[in-house]
Image (tube, rainbow, N blue to C red):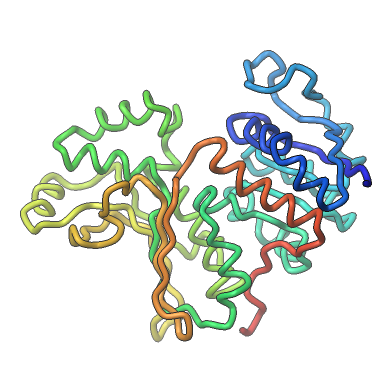
Length: 323
């Protein structure tokens, strides 16, 4: 049994879930001959209430990071987590992250580490529903020709309330009250959150250099009057769809509100979930769906990645150049 020095960056809803699952799944680490030593848990505010054990090594001091063999990053943001993880990655150590924004916006710096298998980031897209793993392994033998997905549950909730006749601002306030939307919901309702996730998917199936600027993005915050009435009259539902298609000009990526037939899988009961449908040469049509959010849901993917990392399994590699 060897001791593995682990660092955790962030201890909000997801980070607390990670701590809980590491404790609950300790036997799975022991089966690998590993005992986890948590070197530190970096937080911004030591006084914030957290549902964690009292002896957890919470700190605002990141000096423990260089001593860690593996880092788990669930703090969010872009520049600060990247600065904290940069030397760790340069040292050839694995990083487990749920940070879609950092992956989407700073890919030029992170891509070499992803290509070496150092980056594990299943939780960055569709929470605990495993899509990046299959896309970066089993489905590499197929050529994806079309992908569409529901990647933002906040928008799905708001659109559902608007279909029921609620005003946009009332539906947004309800989503915030229930904890579905942030105090500043801009990234969700503008479509940027879904676009960040779409480029992560695109790098696994279309182009390893796919950039956020290549996504045409339209949110749900300025839908025209009558949009929902027209959809209802046609027997359709409205969803914010992220779509990746290929035409004679190459790969096209778009996030936009779309009217879909009520029989479409994205309109099924429980449509607050994340969902992804793809068509490929070889694999045919595949459909993935699962819970869209929640601390333990996302943490399950993070800890799954951690188990892979400590087992020596490579992370999610982008599509090879020229493939």
